[in-house]
Image (tube, rainbow, N blue to C red; front, side, top):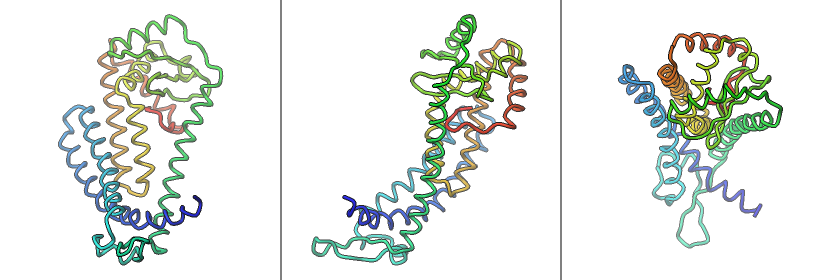
Length: 286
């Protein structure tokens, strides 16, 4: 099996290198189209802008992937004549008359660099999941039953059918939401002790809005695409816009569920101050 790995990589590298090169202009065009679409929707809701932005981001991953599959499966004679001579060498398979692709050093090097970069990005997100699992094994502060009742009332007001647990921890600096099937809201102990009750309730409502929108799933998909297309600035620009619209929509949902929007605004100001010295939690829909 180990002997087949170099051969498999040699067969995949030219198609992968071609897909990477094509993705440069493909993602650029998609980013330009996304900018036009988001500008046209600037007066619409943040939920609409988030949906359109995610659609374009998914297209940025699907279009190069589809090109990779096509280049990998098609015969060498039907491949792009402008890219094939630069990245492959023609050989003969054991089947007579069937040309196969073998990567030259340039294509193999480009594919290897991409694999290293994507692997490093994915490892970073795995580290975020490891940090979360480690955090869940530590002791957390139990919230009073009256607070849990209030969270359940807010959950029903936002039409969330799943149970949502709330954990208060000393090692957390900013509130964030984790998990999909069994969502958990993590609240910083220092923030809970410092803020007034109505502001803490507003922050909990904001995080419940993330649960309602399934932002843990969307954020995970987003992180995966960022890892695969880490080299393209258009991907990072669109991803940043998506996260902004995600937060704006959660603010709108929280404001509609709260009796007064002023505590939410005040709590977000305090939260922004706390975030200045804290990292952005990986795979957290904050």
